[in-house]
Image (cartoon, rainbow, N blue to C red; front, side, top):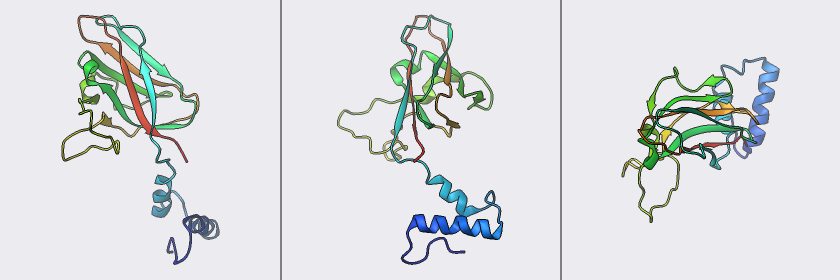
Amino acid sequence: MNLITEGQTLSDAIQQHRTWHQESKASIGNCLICTLLSESRWSDQIKHIGFDSINPISAGATLYIVRRPQIAFKGERLVIPSSLATYFQIYEIRIGHCSQLVEPSAIPAEIFGSPRIPEDWKFETIEVIDGDGIARGERFDMDLAQVSTDMAIGITNIDHAPHRFMASIIGRTPR
């Protein structure tokens, strides 16, 4: 079955494809076209959710910072200012009760650090720019956080002095 025929709009083609599934009793789970269409359900608009300890975290202390998004949100990058990253380890990132790590373990926050960017340089995308090696945090494919679902980052201050922790998860919302 062709997805789009000449002169047909994308929304008409999607409706036609759904009708085809209903009539043929074909499985949606194994359908490549449905998989590709599901990727387009995310908004192109980039959103941020901030994580801030507000108060300095004591040397050697561990803390969970929890946020509850007010719209559905799919995180794609964790970004920590480079000026703070050297003082912390990330030991957990959770969406609801699901860890986003293979196992809870200490990860240097520097992996998620954002480098110093020249003031005249403009961010056109959140993707890594290969030519000059500039990236904004580490790419992540996080689970969808539904409205009011806890998003939590577990951190440990590994320095000998107290430091405030700040970070942002960058992602998208459903269309």
